[in-house]
Image 1: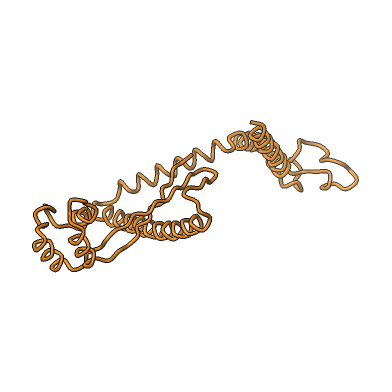
Image 2 (image 1 turned 120 degrees about the horizontal axis):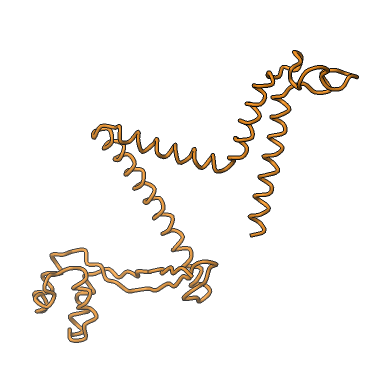
Length: 219
């Protein structure tokens, strides 16, 4: 609250200084215009030709305009931003369907590129974090705003589908998978009802990988 008050107070002081400077500039004549004589003799401030000021009535209008501009401050800027956003939306509505589709296509492509770059960066960070946590023997770690927890899962990747299907049929396991997929065959390897020698044969047709997941929960 104190910080917000200081910011508001500072903004008010700056606005006052700007208003004072603009008033002097608009009203014109100062003691420097008449060395040794003080301010303009005879007539209102700004009426002297050397002052470069405005006539009294125009001075009044200028002062009023300046005061209103300074009074508006940030609120006026927010209003201008809102008007600019509405103008942008209006310009989109003025586009033909073909032009709008072209614009949306480019926007979608830019977003996909941004997502791809972000995912690549996240994967690199994940690998670095997990590596550091392994070195320290951590399974989880707390940041200031997030909690991280990593888990590993052993997986077997079957690359030669034809050989795998042949093996499943010979071992009498083809019907057990319902549909031979990476996931269904993977389940056979951990199924204790499947003979160990059958599981070993299937593992011989696969490549062992270690899948690491890094969970991230907001505190």
